[in-house]
Image (cartoon, rainbow, N blue to C red; front, side, top):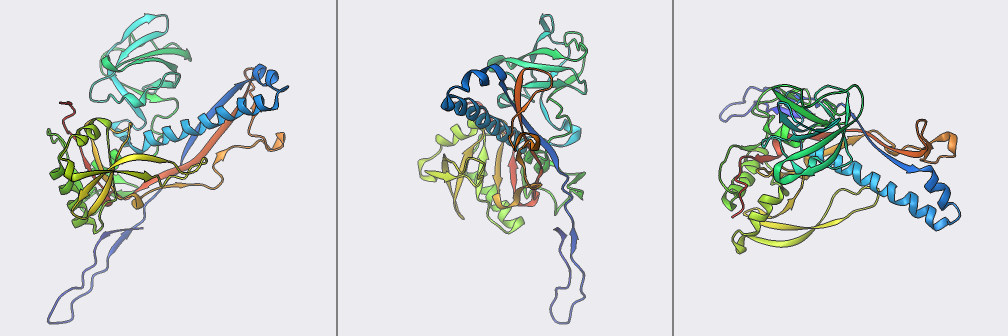
Length: 364
């Protein structure tokens, strides 16, 4: 429940007239999140004579499956999740692309939608609303070129796709991603969580199209904007590696180094990472570099007002017909598969946070 309007009833000299506060319910609709791992059946058979080898063979894919799931969740958290902007979009290309060989295409991602972390070789993707399945086979960051190889479905010839902007999505993820920070914090109209976006239901600080480099003054401005409008001081700053590097070159008396312990206690426990600590007038605030943040973007956040609400018992799906094992034989090929499934959604209180965009990304 969120208070979107304060109540009246204040005054001096005489008993004032009361006016009730306005509360609205956030509507949180869970999304289906999956990660699938696969182990070759012959490799399992070969390792069964060595118990240690079998454990090592199964342990590594399970570990990587959880890491893959967490990375995909991070991608969604820092994505623009507004449906009209392409919910789940990894990037876009314009017009027809280069045919390399049969079913193999080199796609040049537009500079405005390019985010290197979104494209990982061996990921499967879709283009627009078409169900044709492509594999990301290579990525060349310097030219923003992603090579896509079609592996399933009716042929979708990207060299003949025609004019216009075409969007790439993680497989089956078009309009199915969880709500992300960028979409919610940049909203100035429409609805978020079924609440109309407006004065009391949008980011406390939206500093957009800045066209300047990150500075301590901008950081202080956003911290104070949030404190003034929301009443609480932010406790975390998250930005791209480009802006993080720029901060490393800022005045030494306005930063210090620290180790921050993550609040995310996943299946393998907590982990620590290096961070800067920005000395705002309200006290120290950690600054963290995140690979899924756009090069020109900077977030000022209150971690207590970003939650992931999930249905119970998420994680590896056990097979009751196999004694509770998470592995089951694939019905289509000679492999064993395991499925990681979580049903949930991010709940982001926009008024608790701030966002900057349009920061210059040229490194001097």
